Length: 615
Image 1 (cartoon, rainbow, N blue to C red):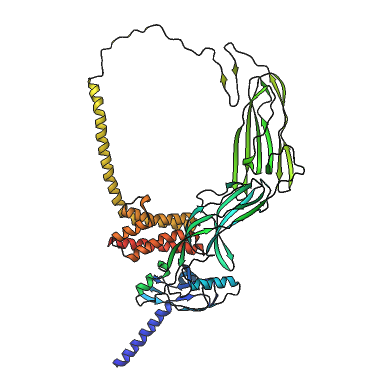
Image 2: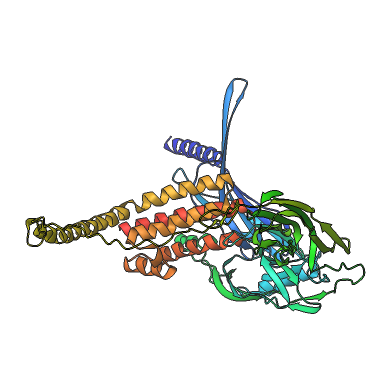
């Protein structure tokens, strides 16, 4: 009887366990066949809310980003019955590096205080026959892990025209191509533009606009790092020397140490904690560019041509054509268009001999964009007729060469007829009135005579010296000094209290910044997102240790955490997270996955540091 009860109980227990197992589904999926150099996703999905997800060992696959997490829940009513579903996914982006069979071990997680694991995934990596260069490159990377290859990151310079005319606008663009995370881009040596007049077309401190491009079967992150409009000033063969930049590159290295049985060791050796990467400082150069500059054609060249090359318009305006002698008039010429506007000289205006003229006031409104330099240049002439009569101001002719049609063009301003009436003299001298820039006056009497009548001085009988007010005035500076000392001491005491308050609220402030960053992520503002994430981590350290922003550095973070007895693995995780925020800006792969991964790393880093500092 007892044996039967035992068997029945065992059967019921096993049945319940089977049902419980059926209720939890933890599946890993990926493509079964991949080519060398191909990037693809590995997705783990679980139908319950899980904690402590631990990534598997990906073997020879290179993890580019992840895990990025997402959740989905839905409620359905079918025939009056409610059914509810929930799924939590962890996504990695990986790259196949060499041929062979790859087995991804099961991932694990905690569901309802119970450890569950996914299935293992088998992937067959085959040779990439699309491009021999791509497969050889991947094989070389597999043989030399952690070694920076020549085509991992490089700069390419391009020009819009290699055979321009002298004075013609040429666009010079520098782009960085990278398939590895890059940070700390600094110019080491600028290109020399000997024989050119140049102007930068990019705003300073502007965030690089990134895009992706597939080259020889491999995906690169591409960004324009500099752009110039250059104008050749002499003919012949001109060479633009290479530009050099320094940068820090993050490379993944294979961890040759075998996995131990300690699950905590396996967990912290995962790519999520960046134990299998190293930073390499390198210098990258652009390619030199040869430009053959042509002389302008002599055929049909206007006599008044002075070197304007581009596409221009001319307009003129005069503020008055009827005035009195010694009054002023203003004549304005505006040259607008696209080309070497900055190099155009002021018009040579021939005013009548009875006019007194001044050098023009020059105003430039030059605009720069991706298509080059355009805008307008204004010349304001001030002239004063000294005698009455009728006068003519002859038109100004602007001659320019347009490379678009390889022709010379001449455009003319208007001819202005000026009527000047005679002026009148005043009793005290001459007075000139001006409507624009001049205000000339002669005053007939400008010397004041010395007063010869003596004043009567009387003694008042009240003196400041040695009076009560005298001693009060002496005491005032002393009292002010005492008050200042008291205020300064109170401010120092309050400052120390603020430091303590910041220390206590460091974790809360950091979490608020992370919430703000998440809003920027939803809005798709990458720059603001990464800035807020960085401020959360750096601000946490600054508040925790009462440091100024200028005192913050990677070495300072390591020293402070070490002095507080924080474990090396927690310190390293925090520092790697700071580095990854910079690397993520140029990291290849899906931007949303990259942002999610950085967010998760930042949360874990702050939680671990807070826990370690409280102990």
